[in-house]
Length: 84
View 1: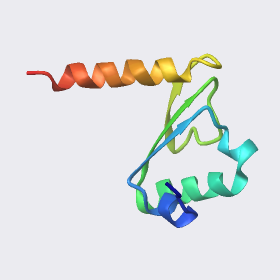
View 2 (view 1 turned 90 degrees about the horizontal axis):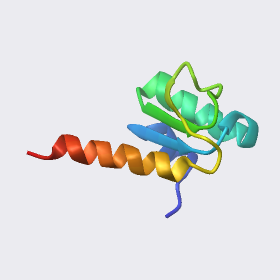
View 3 (view 1 turned 45 degrees about the vertical axis):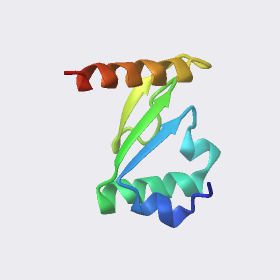
View 4 (view 1 turned 90 degrees about the vertical axis):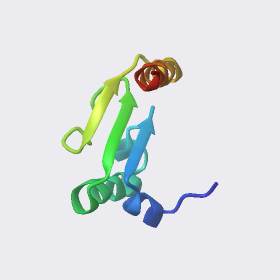
């Protein structure tokens, strides 16, 4: 599935895992910021440290290489909340 910058700008929610967008993809970083500040997108970052998106994103800290495990924990917790 291809995602364009326009898709990012128009997203309602953006999940970034293991990427420091400012350092690794500056254009993407700017588009994420635009989505959050202009269009109200919710931004979530799973990373080993807080990134420069800290003012527009919720950060979940994960040790390097453990991002998948953190995502599984989040999904498990969300599933527990949905049970009757």
